[in-house]
Length: 228
Image 1 (tube, rainbow, N blue to C red):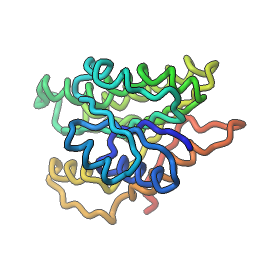
Image 2 (image 1 turned 90 degrees about the vertical axis):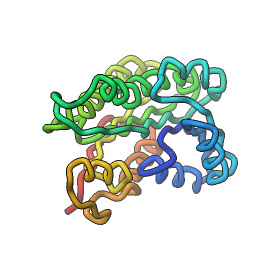
Image 3 (image 1 turned 135 degrees about the vertical axis):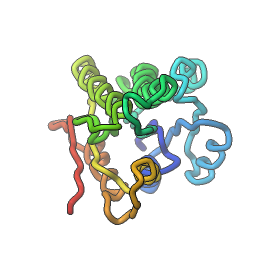
């Protein structure tokens, strides 16, 4: 049985990924925001382990979950994220801090804490990035900056951990039918329809392909774009 540490399992791509891994009998270790979320996910995924940690406060993660990290991890899956649109002239320092903390600093700290377990299993780190991690558009500065940084984190980590057997994949989905996408449409003042965008399960297929790839090959960067 493989063991996977996952953020963002409450909705969207993270929920679809947790469901797929649980359905095939893998063990989930889920990082959640509070005890209420922990109870919900424990009921949804019997046998899963929950770790309560605040991704908005990356400096607190070592104390809250560091000692509960499994001895071996087959994968660390960074899916959680936040987005707030606005021009550089509009975005406050508070929103910049929150975006960078959740989307970049927390993945860096979780990766640091999980590396001994990943090295023990020759595991894989998957960063679910975004098309915004490849090109920045107007009003997307904070989110894109966090995702550009996440791409840099993945590239540096891949080079650093090659000798240890830890592999690193960045997945860059286009617009995906999730609650986050619905929020983006609200901020853009646009109507939202699920069937216009990539299904979360399609992004999950890309992630599972990376997880299941034989060791004679590697997937480093995967772009997932709408098929129509």
